[in-house]
Amino acid sequence: MSPRAGSAGPHTLAFVESPVQLLNVLEWAHAHAHSATAPSAVAEPVSGAGSSGATDPVSGAGSSGATDPVSGAGSSGIADPVSGAGLTLVVLSPNDPMTRGQLRRMAELARDEGHQVRWEEARGGTTAPFHTIGGLAPLLRRARRIVMGDPFSRYVQLLLTITRARDLVVVDDGTATMEFVAQLARGERLVRWHRRGGRPGARDVIFAPVSASARRRLTPSNRRTVEVFSSMPIDSAPDGVRVTANDFSWTRARFGPPRITKSADLVGTSLVETGVVDPDRYLEAVRALAKTHGATRYFAHRRESTDKLHRLAAETGLEIVRPDLPLELIARRGPIGRTILSFPSTVVHTLPLALVGTDVRVAVCDIDPSWLTENASPRAQGFLSGVTGTARDVHRLSSVAAV
Image 1 (cartoon, helix red, strand yellow):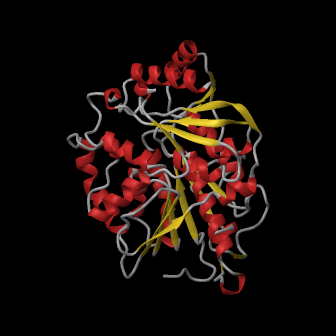
Image 2: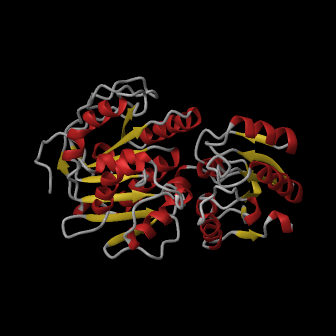
Image 3: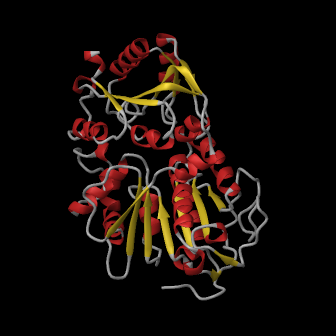
């Protein structure tokens, strides 16, 4: 289903809610632009996308114009389907200040690459979702391809019910991508791994038809293609789902190589905030890791609470660093420790790719079963062990209890 020549709207519409998702959309666009050859690329004229009048907090400019605020390039000419005016990034902004700050920085990088960015205050009040969805509906109906960073997101699932796009792409939202592909292959409802095991809440029941519709749309058919662009190990993709490897080539081309220090750095996790790991056990593990491996800095996850980080600093002596960009970019820019210590998380898969060719060693520490809270999902231990066990090019540490 190709749009009419001269119809308003981008070829590709990407929805992101986190800095990592935005980074991986940039990686996807870079990989596809470099894999396409100029003679065979199909280019059609497109015009500037309409808008609901949302204001971009990075540039301060409204998003109703047809001109890229950085490059100044109009969006009415011939465009590559995955670059320039062919790709519009829609940021469904969360309320968390840390995440918003990183998203602003990533939006600047996206503009530097020539992409249009549309910032939506999607959670800015009771009526915000209605304004956001209403303003995006015309673009959704005209887009040929939809790229999404979080298929578990209720916001994204609702938007999928509007689109007529024949090409759907899921880019990494961390280790959740592994669970998404596995659930899709098994025909299960889409539920985040750390929420499985409990009884569905009232919102889950009300939203169930939308979630079921999204799962059907994310299942390949003779009318629809589905691509998963991932740096995660995916072994159980459903028939028809095209898996494309993300090797962080854009990150490596854009940043680095980094200056490497002699000390170790420790990467934080939000497992406490999601209710999986007990906070006291987590603090003990961080203290033991820092002492054993000589770590001096702690790179906080954007969802870690301020109180927890203050306690970590006071009781471990670590310098707490709140990154203004995803850790893959921070590490590639440097300086970065010769050893990066992490618990099971996305970075044990992505950092070795971003830092290929350097002397940095990534080491992952298993989560001891005794650290789990009584409310943790029954699948938590198995999922976290799988994250660690499938990581490539990392040094695996035993749990801290055995260090």
